[in-house]
Length: 165
Image 1 (tube, one colour):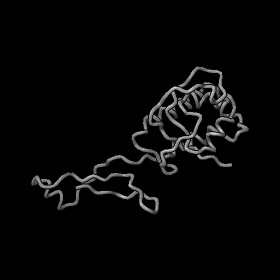
Image 2 (image 1 turned 90 degrees about the horizontal axis):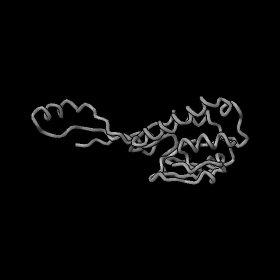
Image 3 (image 1 turned 90 degrees about the vertical axis):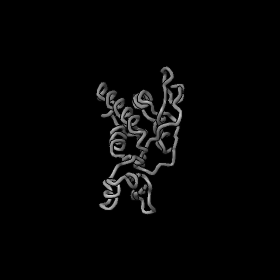
């Protein structure tokens, strides 16, 4: 079974008992969770080392989804996602066995890292040059700057631009 490794950042991070994932460790502050219940279940069934690495990185044992489309994440969550990735990579560098040993649960830390790094942000405001006639108006003090809000998804799943005047 192929797992969906998309994560969402929790709206309110908080402490959770490590017992929730079968670890003998102090409570962790969780601020992210897998969107897919199947992936969260695979994590709960994963090796102790895999559960510990992801728990220490801030991944909660229970699923949580904001409804964000697969492969995307809100731009505002970029720093938190980078922190999760950094924690996992750091833990793996300390214990190369964790990545090398196949996990019987089907959870694959390498695939998780690939998916985490491949996901694309949406929702950032990106300035774009105004059309020529708008530029002349702006030079005269008329009109406002033009911005494109990325993240307005069209029916086909591609980004559509929303022009603000």
